[in-house]
Length: 386
Image (cartoon, rainbow, N blue to C red; front, side, top):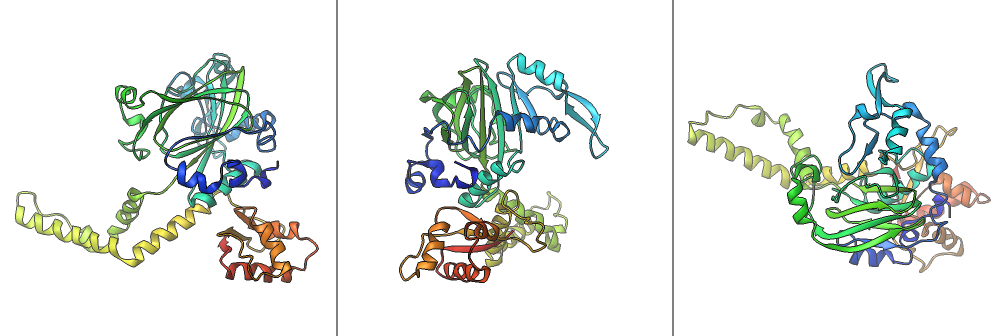
């Protein structure tokens, strides 16, 4: 199966998307065994080595190594260099990296979601399904060496197992609605809290090539390679929340002179209370405005399409036309011509005009455009800016 053939439904097969949404999404983990060939065209050891060989692409921020818990200090596997931009940076040193690997450290490549067409397609497909940004990390682990202790993530996680075998423990405990970079993040809480909160093991799994594992945010888990070497991809879905909404509102408040004005002295209780009450009332007014809700919706839409979905179609100088598939095929009343295109559209989450042309290369461009316009009018597809 090629990357372009892998839709969200095929990722979940044989579990239906409706069953996933009702029984698993943000509720409990899901393991979907798959054939060894399922992800063979998505990623491999050769693809992993090719990325690693792009040595100047990596820094201590984008490559990390971990051994039985915390990540290693940059000095343990990097050397100071002048980066490609001329500024000082810590760049992984191959000899140091290999030394840590031989000692059993887990190697992680971060922020890889757009580095190959195959990774970008999976990331783009999940962006469309969730309507938000996401990140992909690549994990390489070694037999009987644990990179990370039991922990939870602040994102929903989709694990695509690529090579080797890895034993996973999924715990009953779950932290409610974690948020990164706050006191509600895993690293902000003490070990004693986690030891008590994770609870007993709910399920033990061994993942092999082609397996999918979904873990909702907040669920405790850990993993240990059970073969000599393992390789897997982790796609983390970054869903915006109410804190993000308030952050966006907060950044705009300085435009209002009322919020730039100094607060009364704290000893003048009456004046201080009155001023704060005015600020609170103004915030409530802003939050309740229709324009605020529209702005947040547009913000979510913009961030959901800015990273991994196709943008360029050179040598054509025209902006790419990107379509999201928004509903089931409206087969009632369709002509045979429209039905043929609708069948093709129904098998994916998104497509571009270039995809459409490749699939229906013998069709006239205007004819194809008219069919898509009719499907858009029927609510099946929606044009988005690339």
